Image 1 (cartoon, one colour):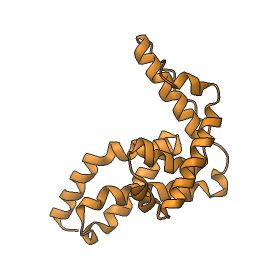
Image 2 (image 1 turned 90 degrees about the vertical axis):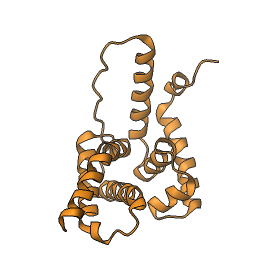
Image 3 (image 1 turned 180 degrees about the vertical axis):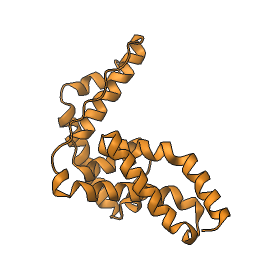
Image 4 (image 1 turned 90 degrees about the horizontal axis):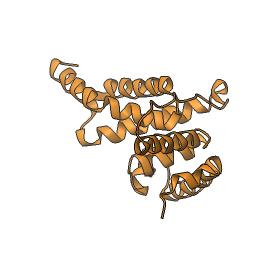
Length: 172
């Protein structure tokens, strides 16, 4: 890569590093694995940087790479065990912030119990804000698959949340 390409990549990396890491965390539920997944995605992008013609598609490429890496890793025998990392206790704060932290914590704990592919669909659709078509493109599957995985993922998430689902709903 020439100096200009290296500079462009460095700028993109700096701008998107935290967002990619957050997405990876939502997918896998472990900050260390999230770092590994984000690194895998950025290394793959760096290798292909000169070949990328559409710079507007960089986010989609990195997102797809993170999702594929997470799914591939979950298929490996040593990763088949469920991860049950405990989130640190939130610092004491006012009631509204505490409720937000509790809601977020319950959601993340529930996502950890959803199968990897379904978790990927839920994160991309509802936390990343992608529509069905963009999610299908990111996962390299049909829109019908995204819809069915969304339905199954939501069912699994509801089961995982159980009674805490009522706590997530705003009071009427």
